[in-house]
Image (cartoon, rainbow, N blue to C red; front, side, top):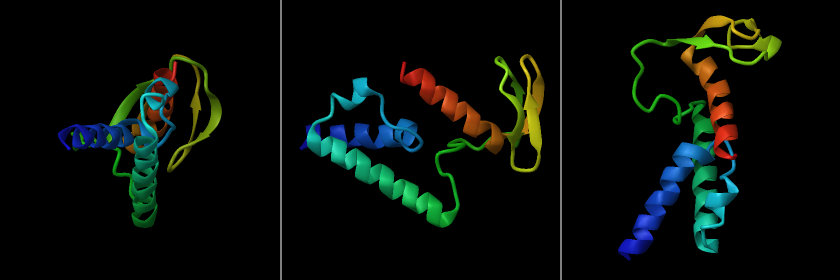
Length: 118
């Protein structure tokens, strides 16, 4: 029972860290048995449903930030017309922006998930 409980803890932690926004990388997914894979999907689905009903992203800022804004330096040209919560921005290469943390998190999580799946 301790082994099964430990595996369930790992699956829940992965759902919080990786799976809420994206699918798990294949290297991790192939180590799950069928029951663990179904548990991961059900747990992620429940969290997503809860967040959509409450209009809340519980996966952002697990530790409260000191400042609601973050300084962002753009490494690659992302172009103009990117819509943020209160304005549009031009993310040209090497530009610096002072953004709301919630706006920046969307792009950071996408980039993080892309680098994890490599």
